[in-house]
Length: 342
Image (cartoon, rainbow, N blue to C red):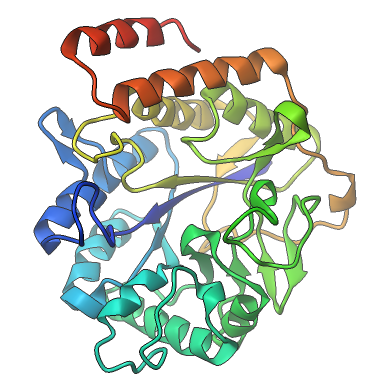
């Protein structure tokens, strides 16, 4: 049985699209968590509906850092419905919110985009406060973590180990050495591995054009590619696969309209996961990933040019429809064309 960890980074926006700050808590919750639109809501409540309809459990990595601005109640409003519906709440952290740490108790008044921008002791204090705040909001004590922007380093793992958090999922082989994540692992690390005192659980990846890797996020892979990466993992005998989404990922870039292409993709992957033989959904609370002895034999899903080209075509349509301003006629034409892209 291969366990699919369907993880959803759940977070208020530090800066709402189209604005200069986070706006009011109510507006931010509506656009980042519930994801309300005139055509319906596609945030965490909708995502839980789809998971439950297919017999699946989700892992919601919840960021408690906005409590620096709005108090723990802002986090409790997220945690309570997830816990009450039996899904998994784990720890997430975006350090941009340290701008609202008015007395500098967490990092001495310093701010930064990523946890990796801070020294070990700063990270330990930040993560300790974040963990305690998440628990105060009603979550069970977290056993797993993912850094905002994947922006962790080896000090992050040392801090997590000191705090008794035994799993991290901040590492994406497809993003190794290319940006925010500074965990000292190679792009060939495709399976859970002991590193820095914790079990590092990499995000799934596939081979793409030019030998590059592409990470396993719902907006980054097509349905065909997600289906293929799960089947590939089953064929290799892997114990688990980690996929990533976000609370707001089924919205347009401005977070005001439903992105029909991505929303359909999330709906379909939930439906397929619920039906695939040899596959189950898992959580860190009930089915934590293990370190596999045979991991050296594992490989990324090989590149398939036609499958990759179909994904690029779908992304072009998605960007055209949901990232740029279009007139009604152009949007309609693009939407009709999207129906023929698998």
